[in-house]
Amino acid sequence: MSEEMQQIDAFIERTSGERMADYIDFLKIPSIGTLSEHDADTRRAAQFVADHLTAIGFEHVDISPTGGHPMIYADWLHAEGAPTALLYCHYDVQPVDPLDLWKRPPFEPVVENGRIYARGASDDKGNLHLQLWALRAWLETHGRLPLNVRIVFEGEEESGSDNFGPWIEANAGRLAADVAVVSDVGFYEGNHPALTVGLRGMVYTQIDVFGSRLDLHSGGFGGNVQNPANALVAILAKLRNPDGSIAVPGFYDHVRELTPRDREEFGRIPFDEKQFVADHGLAGIFGEDQFSPLERKGARPTLDINGIWSGFQGEGSKTIIPAHAHAKVSCRLVADMDPDQTYQLLADYVKSVAPEGVRVEINELNDGDWALTPIDHPATQAAAAVLEDVFGKAPYYLHEGGSIPAAATINRLLGQPLVMIGFAPPDDQAHAPNESMRLDNYEKGIAAMARYWETLATTKL
Ligand SMILES: [Zn+2]
Image 1: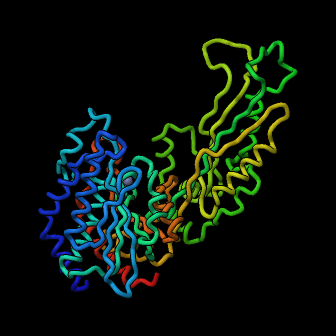
Image 2 (image 1 turned 135 degrees about the vertical axis):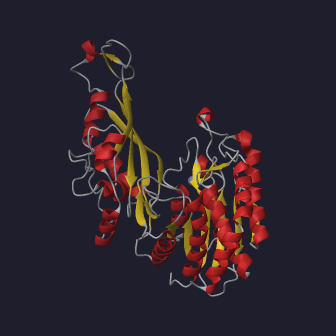
Image 3 (image 1 turned 120 degrees about the vertical axis):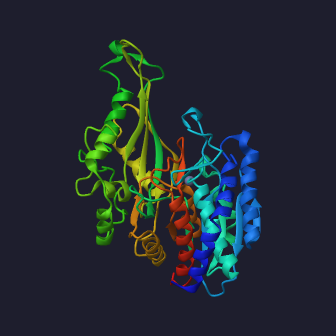
């Protein structure tokens, strides 16, 4: 171990009391970003973090206004010749209801059984706070960081990140970096260290089928008019093949194939299919045969009907031909699919398979980007080495089926490779009552990040 790291470890040890008191103060601030009655609290959390950054030696500390809650920007750029990292976390938290399911009040943190319980303890105040202390450990023991760091902390992650993209675009001039470190993730089942390497994107659409001006009598008109509900299900039935693959021509043309290394890493991650089926009350697991369940979730696109409605749904019978029928249809996207192009393929196909006698419309409601950092990217491998060193186990590489909008936005707008590293335990109950952080993860997380900054400083990015 380097002499620097010995001093940092000693600092982490001797400051644990002070740090815990500070962590508790942070968790006491009810920064529920989505509730306007907590606007002042959310603002107070931003100030708390900004004051911290100033106190430990960060510069250009800026509580930067957006249309909603402010972004926090700060930098430390004195490591000449070393790479620059952009660090992302968020200081807002989820609402707390149902409050009666909390064993103790959500903003009165309690330490018990090696955990701290409070809203935000892990998501994401736990990660944010340990990141602050890893930076502080360097600055207080050595008066410097091993590399340049720019801070971007958000206050609207839990309420949709609406202002994030515009703010990133408007501030791109001060956000240049070689790598973006996104610390809003956690470990895998069994508290196994993990790096999130992939996120899926999204295209969300609505299909509307129109027939007559009003519902028609099915006796008077049946046999002479196309039924919009029948027409809609005919369209929907053509979207997927019986094996679950997507029938839209060209849909898979740009899907990045898994490398042998990818498949090997997917294979290392434990997944109990029986348990999965039992946990969710499923009749069975279903998907493309040639891929494992984790591969299907992380590296394959989907097409799902999210909702469908038409005609009479009340009690008893009503003999009509509905005037119109509707469905919400969305796709999860993977590398290297383009959301606009995917939407166009889907729209063209829906029109091409539409039966005669009805008017069919399709509209895009929203979309989002996927993100993927290859496992063998040097910044990923540097993080993996540090996690193995500190936690004693080689990390899993996770491909999330969902998305982290801020991460994909950074990746797309700034072109920075993402390292998604966080220390939340898998049973942290984030977003649910009795959220907690394992203090062991939190403390070792500081040691891991202090090492990661040192390792990244000498990694060829
Ligand atoms: Zn979060």
